[in-house]
Amino acid sequence: MKSLIAASVAFAAMLGAAHAQEIKIGALYNLTGGMSSLDGPSLKGAQLAVKQINEGGGLLGQQVVLIAPDGKTDQQETAKSAQRVLSEGVVAGIGQSDTTFVMAAAPLFQEEGIPFVTSGATHPELPQWVGDYMFMTPFGDDDQSYAIADYAYDKLGARKVAVWTDNSMDFTKALSKFFVERFEKRGGEIVGTDTFMMGDTDFSAQIARIGSLDPKPDAVFISAIPSEAGLSVKQIREQGITMPIVSGDGFDTELVASVPGPELANEVYFSTHTYRADDRPEVAKFVEDYKAEYGIDPENAFAPLGYDALMLVADAIRRADSAEPKDIRDALAETRGFNGVTGEISYTRETMVPPKPVSIISVKNGKYAVEEIWNPETN
Image 1 (cartoon, rainbow, N blue to C red):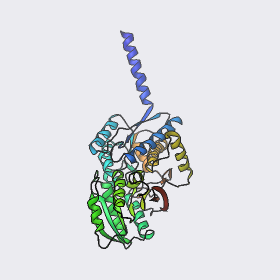
Image 2: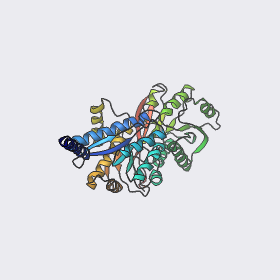
Image 3: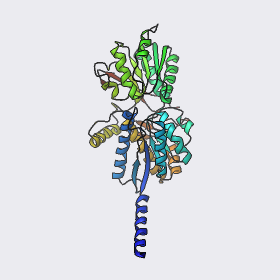
Image 4: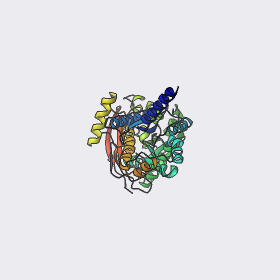
């Protein structure tokens, strides 16, 4: 009997030692529902980063384990996912491509003193809302809205614009707010506003109203998440409306081309994270590695954002020479000149939002192309 007890204790000790050789990181993504076309690629990017880190010997001599439950594009499920990964002893969290879902999870990390790095949520007040354990991989909505407003005014020649806003999301409301602010500052005029809600599938009422506007708009700005992006383009074009459609990174999804089809996916322009057509070696290597791992090119800029978020945490752990959450947080706050796939990341602004370049992408005949790179003020 004593030998059995001794063997059990030894086995338990071995299990404990094995778990001690792991560094657990939570990855909170919506793998089903309206955000899945952004979050799915982000998780794949993060998983690729973990694989590369572990093949290179791990972090601090330990293997990295990613814990990634599905938030199902639901705030309550997202909060449950956060509670689950926190209960499993993660030292940091990454994830989410939308502010609303970050706010369902990141405050729980803040309460526990565990750093959280969003890979894709872009509201510029996120670090202030959550606290000093919150970090952003992407640019802020102010920068990307300013970028597409400048492009609409300068390159598309738009002077009068209608604005549609998904009124159920913090991200989409912020995007419209900053677009209007910049466009009017440039001398443009907002000639009509309209709203819809996440999950809406019929935009006929909004389309009828845009058709009756006087003066007529030169373009329509649509602040939406992916599930509404493709549908809105399809329905607008089906009604014979050919004016440019402009948006932010919620349109950085294959749905903008696949839902309307190549004949209707025309004259669409959106701001997103600098990645497509970028000739930096970090980008070329990521594309090559992603294709080798998954058999396809990265679906959109959210794939490298997931990769960058995980690598930001890994970089902080290496610099801190510690997997203690507070040490990771402190090292993250000191990040300067991190060469990510989506651009250099430095936390130099008081807002803690990294100043990053913004790509302007066009969609014509269902084909995506980089039109220009917009550079923000750095402070």
